[in-house]
Amino acid sequence: MSVIYNTQLCKRLAERNDFVLFLFTLMTNKKTFLQTATLIEDILGVKKEMIQLDDIPNLASLVSSFDQQQLANFCRILAVTISELDTGSDDKHTLLAKNAQQKKNLGPSRAEINQATLLNIPGFIERLCKLATRKVSETTGTSSFLQELEEWYTWLDNALVLDALMRVANEEAEQKSSDESGLANTSTRTQLPQSMKIMHEIMYKLEVLYVLCVLLMGRQRNQVHKMIAEFKLIPGLNNLFDKLIWRKHSASALVLHGHNQNCDCSPDITLKIQFLRLLQSFSDHHENKYLLLNSQELNELSAISHKANIPEVDAVVNTDRSLVCDGKRGLLTRLLQVMKKEPAESSFRFWQARAVESFLRGTTSYADQMFLLKRGLLEHILYCIVDSECKSRDVLQSYFDLLGELMKFNIDAFKRFNKYINTDEKFQVFLNQINSSLVDSNMLVRCITLSLDRFENQSDAKVAEVLSECRLLSYMSQMSMRMSFLFRLINIIHVQTLTQENVSCLNTSLVILMLARRKEKLPFYLRTLQQMEYTEKYPGFILNNFHSLLRFWQQHYLNKDKDSTCLENSSCISFTYWKETVSILLSPDRTSPCAIVSYIDEAYMDIDRDFSEE
Image (tube, rainbow, N blue to C red):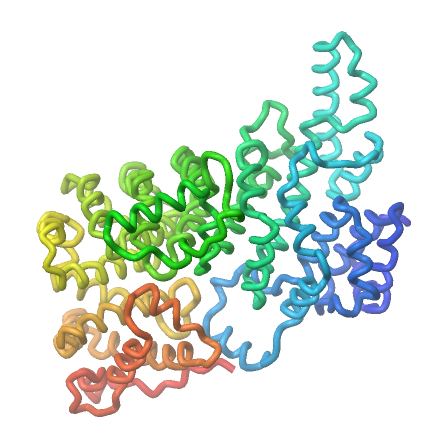
C-alpha cells in the first residue's frame, strides 16, 4: 500500500464512510497495519463528522487481535474518535453558547457513545494499563533494526525524526564499539539502541495516557476509575516515575531538528504534561485519589486526624491497601519533590500545581492539607508568587487556586503564611499579585473570605491569636477591602463573556454576599455598592450587570443536569442557601431591603434585557 497522499485526497476519501470503515478491516494484516493506521488517522483528521466505533465490523475481535505495539498505535486513532471536537479551547467558549448547544444536543454526543463502546470491549482497559505501566525492559518483539526504523518513519511521518534517530543510533554504536573493542557492532546493527527504545516507549505511553485521561473525564468516569484502580495503573506509574516519566535527560536524548530538550514539542516534555493531566483527572473530586499515597503515608493521614481529635476521612479508611503505591514514596510525594525543584521558567509549573490542587478539591480535609503543609508546599508556593515574582498568568492562577485549597479553614496554614510573609514589603508584593488579575486570584479571595468568617465565629485561643496577628486575615477583615473586591469581581464579568474560567468570579461575589446575609448585613452591602456606583459616576452600571448575572446563574445552575455539589463542597454552604440568596437578590419588590432593584433608580433601570443565545 502506498502512503503517498495529500490533504485533498484525504478529504475526498473521508466522504466515503464505507471506505473508512473498510480500512479498519485491513488492520488485521500486520504487513499493512502501520500504513493503514496512518491513513485512517489522516482521514479522520479532516473528516467533518466523527465516525461511530460501533459501525466498525467486529471491533472487539479486531482490538483483541492487536499485539501491544499495535494497540498503542491504534490509540492514536481512538484519540480522534473519543475527544469532543472543541476540547482544546473549552475554557474559552462562553457559557451562553455552551448552554444553547446543550439544549440542541439532548442525547449523548458521538464521542461519548464511542467512549462507552470502548469500555464494553473485554480486557481493553486492562491492556491499556499494562501498556502505560510496562518498563522498557519488558518490551518484546523480533523486529530488525531497519524494520523498527521504518515503523518510526511511518508512525511519526517526519524525515527529520528519522535523521535524529539515525544520529542517536550511530552515536551509541560508536560508544559501544570503543567500550567493547568493536564486539558490539553486530548487535547494534540488529537491535534498536536503548535510548531509542526508551523514546519508542515514551511515544506509546503518550497515546495510551491520553485515551485513559479522556475516559476518566467522560460520563462513565466511575466505571473507568474502578477498572484502572483494579489494574494498578497508579502504583505502576509510580514505579516508572524516576526512570522514565521524570527521568533526567541524557546527553544524546532525542530532540527534533530546530528544537531543544526543554521545548514543549519534545516527547519527554509531552509525556510529563500528559502524565500530570492524568493525575489531575484521576484525583479530581474522587475518593480513589488516596491511591496516590503508599500505606505509610495513609497511616500518616490517620495519625494527623487522631492528633487533631477529628474523625478520619471515610475514603482513607476504606482505601484498599493492596491497590496503593508501594516503595518509600507515593506518587503525590514524588510529584511534590520534583515540583519544588522546578526552574522558575519551567512549563511544568502550571500542570504540577493543577495536579496537586485536584488532590485537595472537594470537601475540605484538614488531614490532606496538613500532609502537604508538612512537606513545605505552602512555603514553596509563596516563594514562587512573592520572591520569584512569577509573571505567567496561567501559572499564577494555578498557584492561587492551589493556595486557596491548601489554606481554606486551616488556621495552621494562615499561621505559616504569616511566618513566611513577615514584612510589609513582602505582603505588598503578595497583594499586588492578587490585584493584578482577580480572574486568576478570585478563588483565593473566596478562601480567605470563607476562612475569616469561620474563624471569627470560633472561641479558640489559638484562632484568636492568629486572627490578631495574620496580615492577610486583618486585611480581609476590613469592610472597605471586601467591598472593593466585590465591586471589582462584578465589574470584570458580563453574561455575554462568562466562561468556565471566569464564572468563578460570579460565585465568589455571591459567597461574599451570602456571608453578609448570614450576619443580616446584605442591605448595607447593596447600599454601599450603590454609593460606589455614584462615586464612579456610573449609577446603575454595577447593579444592573449583577442582576443580569444572577438571572443567568439561575438558568445555568438550576438546570437539572448541573451538579451543585462542587459549589457546596468548596464553600461549606448548602446549595439551598445559594438558591435562596439569589432569589432574594432578584426579588422584583422595590420595597425589599435585600432586592437589587431597590438600589437602582428607575431612570437607570435596565434589568429585563434578553441575553439568551440561540
